[in-house]
Length: 630
Image (cartoon, rainbow, N blue to C red; front, side, top):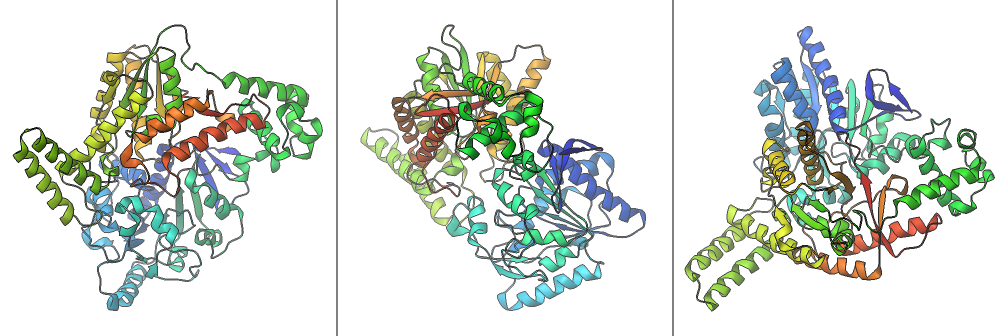
């Protein structure tokens, strides 16, 4: 892996085609992508020609658009000569729909720059079916009239699609109407408030058109893109993986974050492909990998195991295999901690929970242990989580309160009015539309009551539950705002009031616009500002949410859980009844949240056991935050 001379926070991955550049965080990646786009625009402006761009919608490019908007406002980047062609659009949804790519690109980009309206081209998803072919021909003709595409900015689907060119799309395809792959529909189900609401068709720019672009940038962020990035960059080109056809293009670059690049051979197992710059972390990762590869615990690895698996350099640098294994064993043993905040002095602790159930799902067993050790444990619920509540649960609560008030002779007239309003609003709501304020408030109350019940179940006091309701989340839709000064102030006020010795933060940092990452960034900014003001800062431990777990070599603290701990943790998760049995946004994993949590905790303990450490029933894992930006 080599650093690029002009990008100190980026590395070019050898042996990949197209070229893959890995960035330390999404902000550096987005700035780099925006600079490339800006260079194309300035080059064309300088010779009096249009810069013709193919643009996507969605969460992946949004940081690039924000940087381009900043460059326009602060650096004078001129978009008056730019021509844009949207790459795709859902078929059959209104252009005013929240999920419309037309609406999205205007709200997040085009409305904020000085582009001429006549230079904006977007597929029309409302066009009658019998006119689709002609519409697509005209779209292609407009691209040709503009001299072709100078730059195509792309994302990639987990099945390898680019645009909506699904697997087995012809390499010479043009703008057309396509059937969406089930995997593509599942990936956007949360945007439509349920898979049943996702369109089955879309209009997309074809692979042939995209491949004729003079320059192509593909962006990929997050663990869920890692496997398809490896297949695309390291396996032969095939129409089964449309993105892999970009190998044939002379000027394509993949811009990746650390998580999306994690499965590339040079990143995951660099010792298999050439010389390695060994450090302590890489050494631990390699030795743990060797244990799994050979099915041997650390204490049984031999020097021949190292040599047979391309790790002879490690022996040269660190000495005998027995000493290397002893070092890794001791390091892993040091991470096992039944009392993660100590057990002698009473400490103040805050668990920051992005959603109302992340605390018990992710670290419920640790919360039990912290409370048993006598610490003052606070939980800060950062958002209401109201968009993840089914409509029928809101209807049920409105009906229950109305009947409750009738039974006890409380103001029944008002509750009946609210119940009627909620019923009317939910009956008339079209799929994917946001709720009215009253419905959002009812759904927030459901999550509020469940969160308190779960916190009490793991031993917290009700008065130590803090509901921050951060402003960035209050959009009523899946698409959230970036964090801002008001969010930071709320967090700073809580930290100043409690003065914790230790805090726990959701460490799902790959999705640049997911709620977990936005919450983490706001917390880290709060800590930075408090540190600048001379405040003593707490120890910060990062936990993972319901989706992934830290790798063994990444773990700094592992809290062992007994069977009784796990049983109590499950009961705390069960308090979140609106998320039980079936969640509104379950992701692609069919298991319930409690099942994912238990399986993950048991698997973490198994990983420790497999490398030869003491056997525990289950474990919750944490990383220490090193104080660097994300």
